[in-house]
Image (cartoon, rainbow, N blue to C red; front, side, top):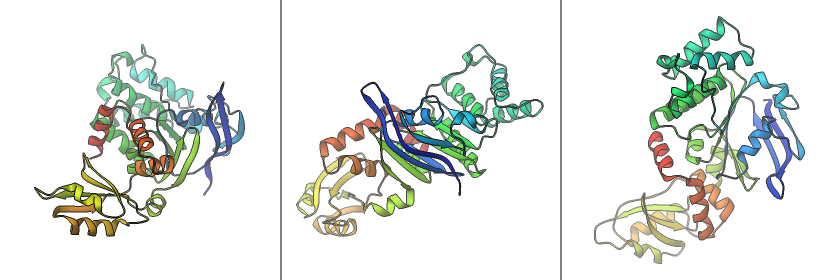
Length: 329
């Protein structure tokens, strides 16, 4: 299958700061790929180079078979991280203007605008000025603008930021539909469980460098579970499990008591049996490896302090992530 995006050894600096270094990337046509990493990792800089908003210091890239996005602009839909609509324009007027920039004309343009406003439950807002809409409603309008012309490649930079759970689910559904219709979708996000839930392929970036590039299935197959969750019966001391060889530490988490294991010394199935034998438990099971776990392992290794710092960076706003997790439940 043809590659929709090809990047070879891209480098981008801002003065002394290296934002992206040595980035190689292939995005298959028709795929749904997650570009993930903490805030400040270089994701948005990568997307802006892809969109020819910024130009690399060195390296080469191709977009839809052309040397730059400028040569393929009418075949690309882009939702930038920085939100923005023409505030004084009415919603329908704004969307028609954006559609005309992409080569659409009436009556097809008007028909598509009506369809999409109904699809995102904004038909009643068609004649309102954009400034009258809530932030979430404006974000849905911008999403429409990015897909109205039925592009081959859709690039969404932090599309879930600020959305309530209902609209987050709706946007997830619309993104999945675009992918199912054969379009290439790149989802750029620091919220890893969203990418894990939706994407086929994952590219992890940290400090401007790619640290992982694989499918979800490949990632799970390559990483053994390193945490066992258990619930001791009343009166049992969960710290008894800390004496089991191969268990690094026991801690109380929001998911329950967690035994952090060294999977090379004590594989998860053996750890489950050992904990069940060491104390009375109501439940005990290996925790499924998440993208966050893999990222932390890749970057921080066994350094507990660095692991904690990375998780804090990935989680960002607690309120935002709780809302996102609720929407994914």
